[in-house]
Length: 338
Image (cartoon, rainbow, N blue to C red; front, side):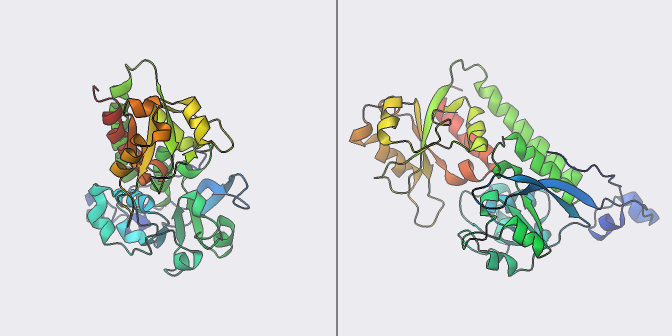
């Protein structure tokens, strides 16, 4: 991702305001004439939900002070960068929690268990709306399009991870960008390195595995209904599973995938969502049992070999660093010998 390079000083006026200066600056009361701002980030916009994302430059004259995170994982990422006081509200409060920041998250202004509307997002008078790209729409379920929010004078940041063509590497690009936007480069670098170390350990576990396994994702909310989701344009999703040597067998399918096609293709592994962290949601164990006992699927090798696994929805479709946690849990199930 292209971004404007800026000179970050040790003790700018802004850093003093945010309490970010070192001891030497506090003792000598010296302030550099240079500042970190303005910062221009190359981000994304699109005319409508059916259009492709286009690059869109956003300029910040100072660190945003009132941020709306449109989903839980977006807020959790900000918390890891020490930005709790900058979060004015968070929507989409569902899915597996990051236990490292769960106490701080519980203290945030939670705007709703479901996706929030534009009206709700604006109710806290934000200066930045941040998060999952698919929610930047002017529909009832969206928090407002990039274009409409920009016309109202609000900055936006669409996570690169949630844009078509992204990979898990996009997590690191987002962290770098947030480090610049909020002028917290050290916190960003520290968290980035923590994640990179975890990713390296994860990939080390499976490096000696020769032939990769194929999988299909069944997007179920009712265990009695089978719906195959090809995830054709879900590049972040597909790349994340590639980290643990699992290949989405339908990733090149552009249309609907029937149950008959699923059975005929016969992938090695079946993945189902775990909704247990959602109010009234069906647990992953129930989902797995339902698939294993489904007579129509009984001839599939994944069912015969009991290679049906559940993953929390947020670990698959949060488009965030939390996907790494999901893959860490899944790899131990798929490859217990590792």
